[in-house]
Amino acid sequence: TILMGDFNAKVGVDNTGYEDIMGQHGLGERNDNGERFVNLCAFNKMIIGGTIFSHKRIHKTTWVSPDHITENQIDHICINKKFRRTMEDVRARRGADIASDHHLVVTKMKLKLRKH
Image (cartoon, rainbow, N blue to C red):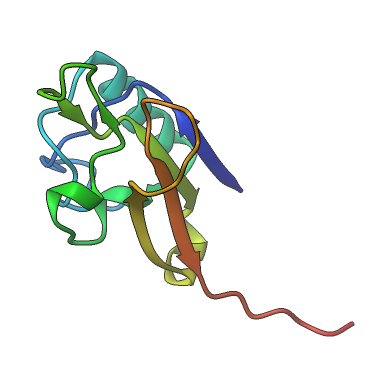
């Protein structure tokens, strides 16, 4: 299972109690939507990809306010915990021309496909 989208959920850097589903490389502090999102991921045994990989702030920020002051990580890509090792990177790409105030979030995955 892959879950991705704009959840308006700030999960933050504190992974206390959620070490099995998120890393410490989020951005900012958790908000109410972030708390609900973390609980949803924990219940469904999903990893929050953007918190696992260490990146500069520019590659963690998925949304910037119109005044360019507030930056948040509110868009996420999550996968089932048992496929954690397939996820090699998650980052925001600023250069994508997608006519949005959100940045494109990209994951790099390595899949081993079996022949039947």
